[in-house]
Length: 271
Image (cartoon, rainbow, N blue to C red; front, side, top):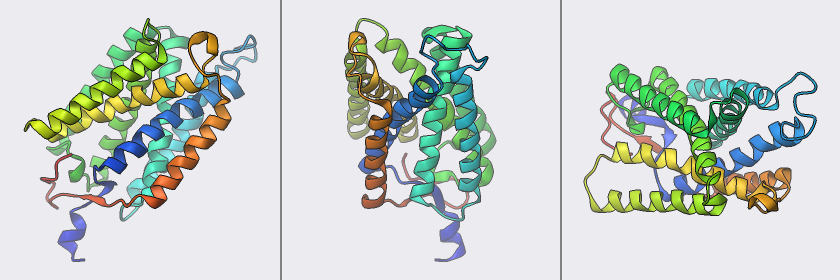
């Protein structure tokens, strides 16, 4: 592989059906794993919450954000695309997004609507700043460390937005399954738009990427929330273990390749 071709390889995966399946499983795991730490282990939703002077959501956020920073640093320093490293970093961003959204909407008290609108504005701002700085928000154009930083900041904000948005819709009359159906249908509509129109593939990618998070959040909540609240009340650690096993299996077995764009940052591979 010559220098020009190597420079054109992104360290994020090509967008395939396998990518979306793993992404949805990762977001579902992020919900159950984040709840396992902040709610089950740190007791944030128990009668003793806060009695030790610690906020479970805040502590969980510190844990997952610390892990995310380490993994993003490793991802940026990597010289090529490594599926296990990439998806581990995605998982860290989903779990951090879960605890950050819960801290903002519940502990700070801005609520689901306020949290969702604020985070949506932050995602749009991140994309705008990224585009102004780099000239592209196409994932095929992520070659430089600076672009990778923008990518992971935007990814983490979108994961946090998805958690708040999923909780907002599921907290209403639709419940967890109804909310999951809404987000699943929205993704189906985006897929139809992708196949039937010439609308920006980059815009469609980011819309779909954001919507997979509330889908995973509502499915995850359906698995582990109490029956009285409309969930199945499965064990959070067991549900998380099953999900991570499925993710690892798919990452190992499903063929993945790096996104390819132009080395000058004007990649044409549609996201």
